[in-house]
Structures are given as C-alpha cells and as structure tokens.
Length: 531
Image 1 (cartoon, rainbow, N blue to C red):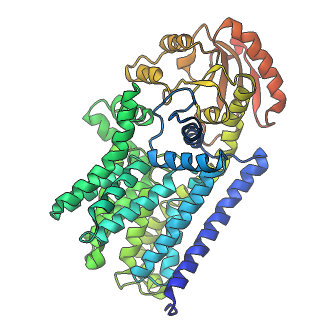
Image 2 (cartoon, one colour):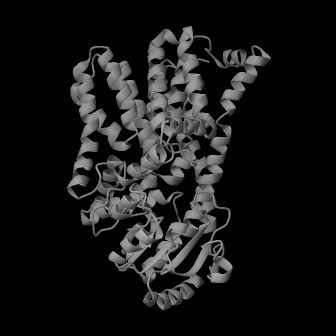
Image 3 (cartoon, rainbow, N blue to C red):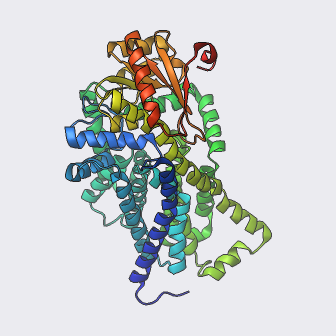
C-alpha cells in the first residue's frame, strides 16, 4: 500500500479517525454509568482528590485536600497546577479533568501520527500504531478516571524521542523544560529521567544530562521543600505511605524483596511480556536500523526500574505509560525492519509456521484480559464510586458541611463538601500518617488523634477503627464492587453526644440514596463478629 502525495493530510486524517474511535468506544462506558447513576462520575476516588486540591489552590490559594490547611497528598504537581489554572479562569466544573484528558489524547495521537510520517510508516502501519496505543494503555479506563496518565504517556514518549533523535542539537533550556515536565507530571518520570541522564553521560553529554536532572529536581524540590516548611514530609504522603508499605513493611529484607518481585511478576504478566518482547527485539539483528536498538534499550530500562521500585494497579493506570512506550517502540522497530512492508508481509511473518504463529498470537493476546477487564472494571467503577464515595460526600455536605469528619476514602468528600476533613488512612493527615510509619496505627492511637481534633463522626471501615467509644450506627453496602477498597462502609458517632444526631440524619438521607445501596442498621449481637 502506498500513500498519496499529501501524506501530512493522510496521517492527520488517520489520527482524527483514531481519536473519534477512542472517544466513541470509551463513550459507551460513560453512557452506561450515566444511565445507572443519573449523573456524571469518575471511576476513581483519587480523581476527586486531585480535583479537590486543584479547586482549593485556584479558589483559596491552599495546596490541600481542604481549604483550611496545607496537605501534601498529590504526586503530580504539574497536573494539579494545570487543573487549578483552568478552574481559576473558568470556574470549577466536574468535567474539566475529562476535557483535559480528551485534549491530551488528541495531542498524543496527532503527535504520534506526525512521528509515523517521519519514521516512514505508511497508512495501515500508522493506524496499527495508534490502535495499539489505544489497546495497550488502555485508553478507556484512563478516560474513566481522567487523571494525569494520558498526559504522562505523551510527555514520556516525547522525551524519549527528543533525546534519542535530537541528542546533538537539543538545547540545555529545552532539556531543563523536559525535566520539569517529566518529573512534574508524575514522580515515576524520575525513572525514565535517570535512564536518559545515564545515556547522555555515556555519550559525554555531561551538561545536557545535568540540565535534564536539574529540570527534574525543580518540581520535586519545589513541592518537597514547601512541604517541609509546612511541617510535612519531603515527599507526598501518598508516596511515603505506599512506598513504606510496599518496600519496607511487606518486604523487611532482601528475601522479602525477591518474594515481592515474584508476586508482582505473577500478578502483572503483561509487564513481564512487555519487557521480554523489548529484550528479544533488542537482541535481534534487524533492530540496528534507525536507532531502534537505542529506543528498545532505553524503554526496557524504564520498564525494569518501574518494576523494581514502583507499583502496578488494578485499574492499570500506573504502568499505562510503559505499555504505550513498549508498543510504540516495538512497532517502530518491526515496521522499519523491511521484513514487513505491507499487510501481506505482516500476515506472512505471523503465519510462516504454526509455532511462530502461536508465539506471536500469545504475545499479542497476553494483555487481552487486561484491556477487556479494564473496560468492564472502569465502567463499573464509575457506578461504585457514585454509590459509595459520592453518596457519602453528599451526606456530609448536607448535614456536616462545617464539622470535623473522619474518612478513609476522602476524595469525593473533600471535593463536594466544606467539612474539616480528617483522613483516617493518612494521605491527607500528618498525624495519622506518622502512626502508620511508627507501626502504632491502632484504635487507641487513632482515637487520640481524632479526639484531639474534635472529630464528630467517621465514615470508614477496618478493624483499626474498632474503638469501644466509637458508636456504630449503620453500614452501607454496594454490590458488584470493582474498585472500592471494601463494599461496606460504616458510620461511626465518635462521641455519645453525636449519636442521636447521626441516627436522625442517616434516617432522613435514606430517601436520597440510590436503590442499589443497601442500608444495614447496626446490631452489636449480629455484627460484632463481622465488624
């Protein structure tokens, strides 16, 4: 297949077609959730955390979950500031993160199409490039959550392309800006940045490596030193607590690290497959052309560092940038090898022998469950978050909008209400976070913090909150749970004086709850064993 003379127009049209396909395909999930919920909702409570911080920064000039005080919770300074700037200009609207992600996806696809033209990919190869990116990320679930991951993917692949293809001509200023964007969009960008710095230094580009490194340090140190000045940790609580729990509490020693890596590998076979494919492509003689071996090596290095030090996620968002990069680098190598010049060559390579066909199909199908599951999980998650987190937030806004309220899933409550929110998991509260780090996260210690902050009620779950002075009033249960930590949340009156009011408020709110939420009044004799 050959392209017409106007290849710019053809590649742009392919990108537009891919964007429309991605939005229509993803749109079915939004419609499905909208029909159940009756209103728009995101698939992650973390989405509301980001929105709450951005709203407070834009409207109250406070970097925090609430407008009352600073909290170091978000690990994407750049995306937070971007949302805050939009809110400052046009006001707060729940659909802002979704629109930003649609623009980010459009930018990514148009940019990839332009690169496909530079890489001499023809029309069908460009279409496969974009559809593979859509499939392997996967795009729908990232739109359902509408956090920073699509923008992160674009920045990550752009940084690779700029440094690999323009290493000699790229300026120090541009490298500085790239470093700011790479680390500022997500702290996982530090992994890729480290690989790129080592590559630049290997090629005697010392100042360029330093410029990229300084750029990466700017957002990390800016937020880090500001957090320290407010009495918080240098890194956001989300990284401190998750990193401590994953890399210290759960591992304890070198043997524990090995066990955790084996567990991670067995639970995330798509990540292992991506690294294996990149490695075999790297060792293949045909990868020497067009700097493809360099592309493969740097991409593999990023995958390895992320696997060792970072997390994967059940809605497949943390590793989305790695899956996209792995596919793009793989497809670029294959199409530029001259073994596959057209669709007929592709079929020939795939089915040259039964063994080879099975191998190729197995590699292509390995992320199949991940991609399909992400769509079903994502569409269901929008319903789950609406039934549990958003309903809790609406309850707090109606009856406790100025009170001190404790919660474990704090995003929707922080975004929709104006309460003085106490994060009982520790993301948005320093005292609770210290209890976890000191291994004193227990009912007695938690209650002491809550009493000191005059907390009235709590909406949470878990045995760590089973303090004898906390009066359980009722539970809400959701069904077909795909994303919430637990399908049951419990309402506590922290003091005897708060008990009658909480009972009355819950009874009134029952009329407003979706029919799909089951209310279970507390009976100590029946629930003592389960709670």
